[in-house]
Image (cartoon, rainbow, N blue to C red; front, side):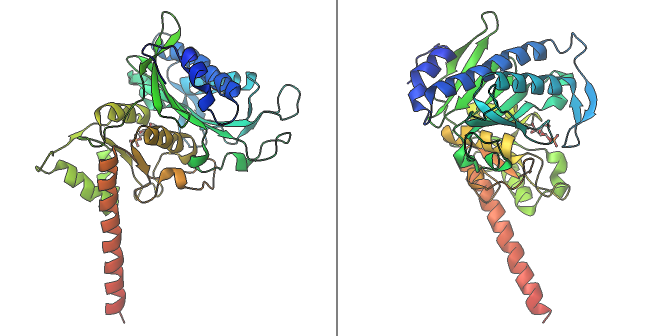
Length: 350
Ligand code: P6P
């Protein structure tokens, strides 16, 4: 249930019975995220003015140059989440391993784990293009009272109890779900309050925007090449429009409002694609599905995938249901053609 211009705090209280486990803890969890988001937003908005823009001089486990704001955002979210006595573990794109939080009594009584990409699209910071934070929340699966373990983080996306993103753009928005629809809140920086600006968001079932880095075209699987050519041909509602910001949160947020598909497929340069399953694709898939969209790796639903590694990458097709289904059709046909050709080749060699 939502009322126009309701604040985030009012919305959480009014809907906390939706949270399957302990309503009070969801409130505190989301409140800690919205606090950290306001602090990070303040820094992002003045990035050009202070010496916080540019590389930090370190590289993260992904082998990517850490931008100073990456590190700042990572530290802020970890610090805020740790202080709230709800989280027993945090995994971050910026940290090689997960962080154990034993609680102020050292008794490991906290029930939730949070996985986070603290500043997605950070390479855009220096050129003043919007960036985002992505978070994913699970209930731990190992016994409460014991230290959190890796298996608490390697849960399929279906197990998420909440997920969301913050987009630091022309305005700053928090978009999240607890499995009862997807709602968007816009920050009023003058008041420091978040207002329900996009209640019950619905991903358009189809659209005319496709987002992919076509600079990698020659390295894509044939099915992706075929789908791109389908988007570009003069027929029906095509050619579609190509839009690619290079910041996944921004590309998917735009598509959720206007309709469209975002793709980061595997390629001959990156056998599993670039995006990470646990703290990028799973939370975005949960949010998008709750708005009526679809998210797969080109063949199977993202939320059904059982993770094997903390920082594992996965090909990602996400957006308007009918567009993702069309892309999957091209992927399936291409795979079937490849298998037929392989069979013919093996027969002819006998
Ligand atoms: P490329 C940002 O670094 C990111 O993880 C996503 O936000 C974005 O969609 C993608 O990488 C862009 O990658 O290879 O197209 O520059």
